[in-house]
Image (cartoon, rainbow, N blue to C red; front, side, top):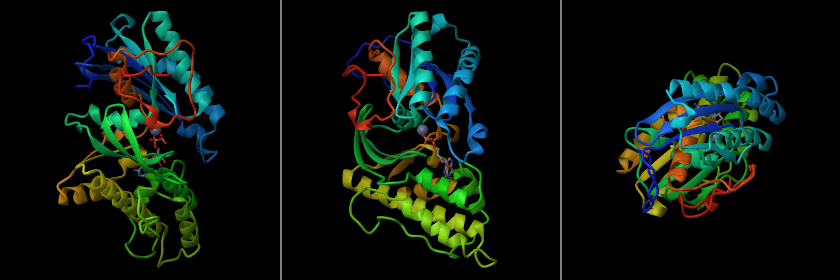
Length: 356
Ligand code: KG4
Ligand code: ZN
């Protein structure tokens, strides 16, 4: 089910424990190369950070330390797995909040060392890109991937597992950030994407207008930072003729239109007919409706992770980790994590030493 590197001789079957702690979700999962996903556990720190209107890195790190071990124990128990059934440990090694990453990296490497298992550090965005491989009808390579999360908005040509070429990204705010900042201006709790989408259900079309940033220019770059000013200006005109819900609806339309137009452009330029959309914003219902309709019209197909694997989770880290561990990748000695880590520096599993 989970692809292993071609030409290698992966040990079969292989079972890995995976840990995610790059931002404000602590998570653990157990994935088996033949039996699939056996368990996944998640604790979201949203309540902890909500009063600050965003993630507080120091609080996030401290909370991961408290949450991770019980989550791991529960995941192993639910998966009916003991340490002797495991073949490796994978964890998110970056990009993300460095303190938060280090809690997961230190724990993963300590467990692997105590249990005599190999470990591998996974790129968080590769995890997002590979999350749809957990589904019954997974996308094939090559494809175009649109990665839309709270921190990233990227179009990528995914030629093979581990072979990613960046086609374009945002120059400023990410799409999720545009949702979150606009939601804040509309008085919604953090993180506001899902709240804003719910409010938009009551909105009326055409009550205000927002720009579709960068659509008039060639290329595959995005810019969402201007939208929050447009939303701020609109909130000053709120009355019976323009409600918060109307603004939410039009903002969502502007973001979805922009993401869709650039994704279609990327498919056209690359000559590919498969699109994978992943990351937190790919949970958006309106986005899924629009993308499905427009891609079908063009004889192309779009794939997503299941809703719970759009936002951060350990199951997606397990997919990337299993692919890399089964190809013989191992961490170099020492505990390392990276706040910044360019996706296109990755190589296909087994083709280079993977630096965790
Ligand atoms: O992938 P993710 O969990 O975290 C990062 O790695 O950044 O994505 C979180 C982002 C947040 O900005 C959140 O508001 C957004 O995904 N999001 C949504 C929806 N659900 C989550 N945005 C729009 N509509 C949604 N339904
Ligand atoms: Zn993420």
